[in-house]
Structure formats: C-alpha cells, structure tokens
Image (cartoon, rainbow, N blue to C red; front, side):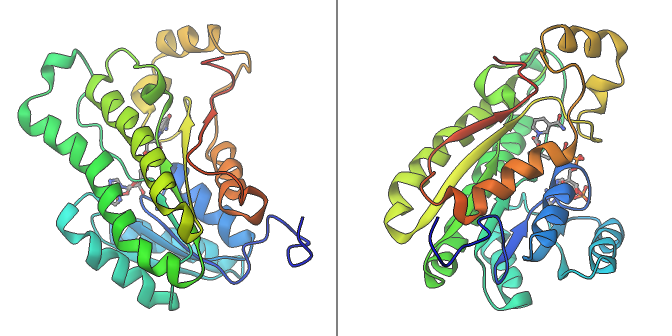
Length: 257
Ligand SMILES: NC(=O)c1ccc[n+]([C@@H]2O[C@H](COP(=O)([O-])OP(=O)(O)OC[C@H]3O[C@@H](n4cnc5c(N)ncnc54)[C@H](OP(=O)(O)O)[C@@H]3O)[C@@H](O)[C@H]2O)c1
C-alpha cells in the first residue's frame, strides 16, 4: 500500500455519482461511500423518495445531494453528468446502477419497444453516462466506473431473457471501456449481484417456490442485502483496487459457483 493511502478504503475528498440511488442497492452504495468519506450525488426519478434518502445520509453527518433525473434517457446523459459535476465541483466515481426490466416471462413477450427500452436503460445509457463522465474523471487524474450487471448477465435466468442479454452486453462494455481508458487512470469494473432483497426483485423473493428453488442452489442460505453489494463497490472504487480493471465480480452467495 502506498504511504499516501494508509486507509485504503477511504474515499475522503472524492465525489461519487450513483444512478438509481433512492432505494435498494444504489442507496446502500451511496450510504457506504458517504460513510467512507465521499461526497455522494444520489440520482433517481422520484424527487420525494430521493430527498428522503439524501436526508438520511445527511443526518449521519455526511455530504449528500440529490439529482432527480431519468438516468435511462440516453439524450440526457451529458446534462445529467454536468449537473452532477456542478453539485460538488467535480467527479471521481460513477456507478451505473439504474436499470429497467419491464417484463418477466417468455422471451417472445419482448416487443421491439420493450427490447429497445431494456437496451436503452441498461446498456446504452450507462455507455453515454460513462462517455460524458470520462473527461471529468481524467481531469482529476483518473477515477472509477462500476457497471451494475447481474448473475443473469453471466447465466440467463428463466423469465429474464432480454434483461439478461442487456446485462451480458454490459459486461462486454465494461471490458471495452477498461481497455480504452486505462491509460487515463480510469478503472471500469462490473458487479453481478445474485438475488438481493429489493423492490426490483420482489417478484422472485416474494414467491416461496422460486425462493426455495434458488436457495437450494446457493451455498450461503439467505437472500442478499444491499450492503453485500455495497461492500464490493467500496473495494472497487477505493485505492485498494487501483490495479483492478475490466473485471467482473459476482456477489451471489455462491449461486453460480
Ligand atoms: N435486486 C436484485 O436481486 C438484483 C440482482 C441482480 C442485479 N440487480 C441490479 O441492481 C441494480 C439495482 O437494482 P435494485 O434491486 O436495487 O432496484 P430497486 O430497489 O428497484 O431500486 C431501483 C432504483 O433505481 C431508480 N431508478 C429506476 N429507474 C431509473 C431511471 N431510469 N433513472 C434513474 N433512476 C432510476 C429507482 O428510483 P425511481 O423509481 O424513483 O427512479 C430506485 O432508486 C439494477 O441494475 C439491477 O439490474 C439487482
């Protein structure tokens, strides 16, 4: 460890933007980054829920600001990054966490409109946000990007067909950006969560049969929590991971092991 980073997981002096951060995994990441000393910009669409999330972090004495915008709108990505940069005067970390999964069922339910929506929010928007963030990260001497994929991106889950395709492509995008931007000191990594107890996955964990089926294949016999993913995210944006890029980290209780 270098002398300048006696606490390798400290994010003091860094600013992080987390999309989809008013609840679930994104909120857990924002809380963890803030506790590690970062200034955090929380993004989501619904301003009231977002404001409550920001207040919760501020109540712990940490620095958090809200950015109520739709992170899935490709054309708004430069404006979203510019607004985030303006809030704390720079950007070191981008977590592409917001995602959409408008259907659950056989793959043929995916109409052209649904296909375009899933790819737009889960793949194209993270790319545009990363592109817009790149000069800001480089201006600070480097930075970190995390793309939130899924175990479905490594091994498609039944009922989550095109969502799984989008998350698999996000893993490839992670490698592409890591290769092209490493020379700027920018690391790009992906996390593949397993089943985590959030609103997003409630169709899975609220169904006792599906839950038991998943747990039978999982060495660690419980559903994951947002904090399980936030701990990995903290590692990936900290100095401790400065030699780690283009990699995929699966946090799934061993489900895919
Ligand atoms: N939960 C799991 O089991 C699981 C497993 C694997 C991967 N993942 C991935 O983990 C990520 C987070 O999922 P989660 O389970 O934490 O979801 P969640 O609990 O449903 O939270 C989603 C968050 O994203 C925001 N959001 C949704 N669409 C957005 C958009 N277009 N622009 C900005 N914010 C948006 C939501 O707020 P608003 O509605 O107000 O915008 C909310 O803050 C996703 O990428 C998901 O694919 C989750």
